Image (cartoon, rainbow, N blue to C red; front, side, top):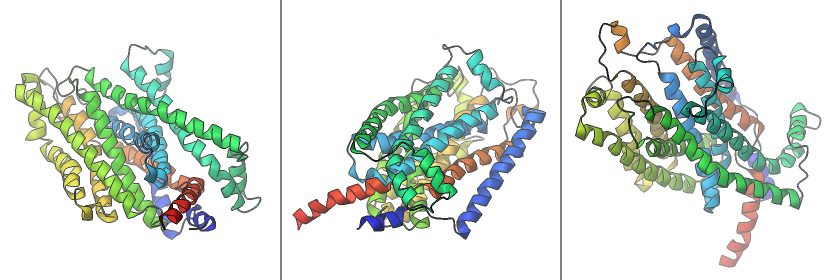
Length: 436
């Protein structure tokens, strides 16, 4: 495949009719979420379904989900790069933009959950390093910074190609020249960029593990049934890697179909990523067994209500659906070669991602409704949690915002690295010649 062919195939394309409709829908969902957030600021958290007992709801569930799926950047780009996985190239930028957009909205949804946005400033003015909340702020800020750099440095090599192939004097060409003003494409710059990416790859892995471990400590250091666990760090991290891998599989299929990238995102990539999903799903299942079997075996009085609500009670349908459809079914389907084809793998990836979101909901809500002291002399509404229209609108708006960032990014930049792909193709030519 020639360099010109690769450039033509991978250059960002203008939105067609479908793309414009998709973008318009995302913008409307974001605006609806913004309207509901303004309403929440005006009238307070009383517009939500949050009450004295269920003081955390789908905002926190959404936060944990965003933090989880953001770990895909370190999984695909950092770990695969450091271990020399050769087929990672078409997936790196996909995983990086998912990571950046997800961790950005994780930061925003926490501000939404605070009720008054000025309280975010209080985290810095009145912060205490003894608090796990401040640990979370520190690691999220660090991870966001590293993720942006991880996205930006490999993108520099594609900037001259984008400038050359954009309309002279256009706004988009000026934008490319601005963000890559210092990049001359010299051998020394490539060497520095490569060393920077390797350094960030090493740095981002412990930060990625820390961000979800610290998030789990926000729960585990709170003395409540279902959260009083030393298993939470590994439980959260394994689940994060699973949803991240599932998210990449979904994105691979969407970009492959939308931009006709069958020659670059091949069946081999779906086959390999499906195997990764199986491994991570089995690992997460193992930690789920640990998380629920031990307290179920002991059946302490405080844990009894919580476990019954999950296994046979109010949340049982959601719980077993998340376990079976979000973990067990994908493992069974993806174990077979036909299940690792693009479309079945895409469906299994969707199940993993949707199941993961509801799994985070199940980590938060049932525990809040199972306090150590029984609920007496309180309104019936305090014993249940049902998100209001405003909560759902803000949550859906945040999810739409994440997708909007990814959508706009693919309109401006190639979703598969052009320079790396050309370099990879050129290196593979001598090997093919020798094999012949």
